[in-house]
Image (cartoon, rainbow, N blue to C red; front, side, top):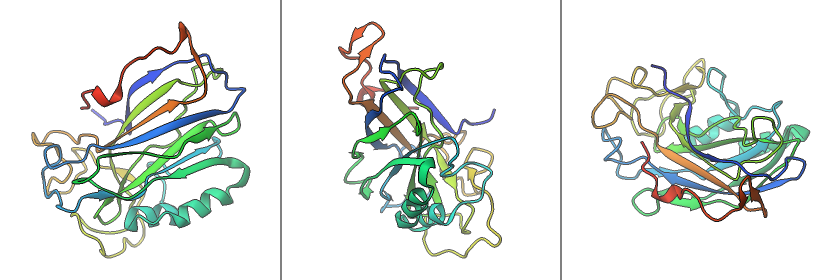
Length: 244
């Protein structure tokens, strides 16, 4: 069975119309650990600054089967976000708001809240990336997520996505190490699954039969909104959810 590129574990509707801009607060949470991903798990495991960008359907930050842009290559290999931010801005009207977080080491910090990000009718899609570090060119994130209702008329009140490890296809290597030889020519971006992990079983769960998510991204609408049943009075708390 094919593994999804991300898993949506929470999506709550609202009555906040997409004719208005929507402001979201997003939290990045580490799920990559020695208990969940035991094979060769590094003692200095950490994440590069997460990047979240709102955009139109005419822009692609990254996608499976595509070649990594220089910006994605830079993030995946070194964690540096400058080139990706320049690419995003250079897309002009195709891109909107973009925010970045901080480097976090898993043994110290396991989540962070990024600056709020604004969606608009022109830029309703969301893509993200963060380097799995140290590694040759591995990352996690999602692409082209649409937080609107099925009819496109309202923004989601909140959503939570679980994301998996990916290979940018720009550098060789099968372990958690930096400074590997370049992949020449570059390969396309591909997802680590049970069928595609290296022979050392990196990223496999303790049972060896699946690749568990390595991160979650939870975004909540901070604009004053009404749910279909009235004012917001609570709901599922992602902090208390049992992630697969």
